[in-house]
Image 1 (cartoon, rainbow, N blue to C red):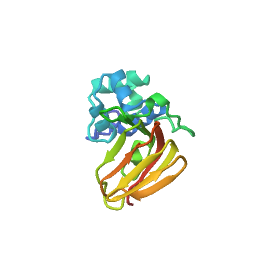
Image 2 (tube, one colour):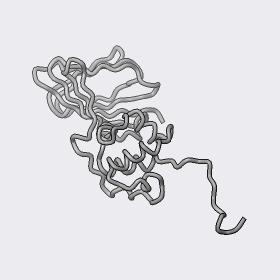
Image 3 (cartoon, one colour):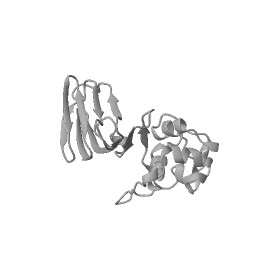
Image 4 (tube, rainbow, N blue to C red):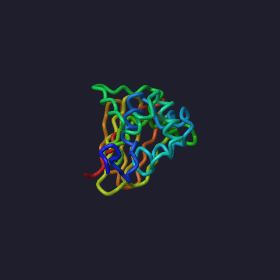
Amino acid sequence: MTKHSARIVTNEPPRVGDTLATLRQAQSLSLDELSRKAGVSKSMLSQIERAQANPTVAVVWRLANALGVPMGDLLGNSRPPAAPAIELVATHATPSLRSPDGLCELRILGPIELAGQFEWYALSLQVGGALESQAHEHGTREHLTVISGSLEVVSGDAQQRLKNGETARYAADRPHTVRNLGKTAASAWLVVKHPA
């Protein structure tokens, strides 16, 4: 074999998940937004970012176009940009969940990589609205701080009313509910701490 024909052969395809996640976050794009821009399903994007799937060349091309970067950037031919010193998440890029009756909205403020460890949310409850939760894993606790209005927390058989500025800390490893029994809309910060 001459030195001109020598080449390194690898059976491992390039892993684009970490690079894709870094580029997407640098542009403050949610999975939904990138899915729409690239024409690639959200579930496929999630699998790629978690290294559970490797995309086809066509998918890499669509993602590169949607992100405005060369294909080589996604394939690891160049280093992804460093994470910014301050990452800004635009209001429209903050995912939220809404109850079927529309009386409860939970904005997901914590980054996805901390889910299952430490999570925080902005909770808005209209009059009569409720956030009802099943038991989380053993040892999980929630911390709820009311920032406007008043709320009631029920954890198992215990219940507590909270006024503006008050905080409740309670077991979340049993069914639990946060309700707005007041006469005006209420909002709160909700922090969920899972066991280490």
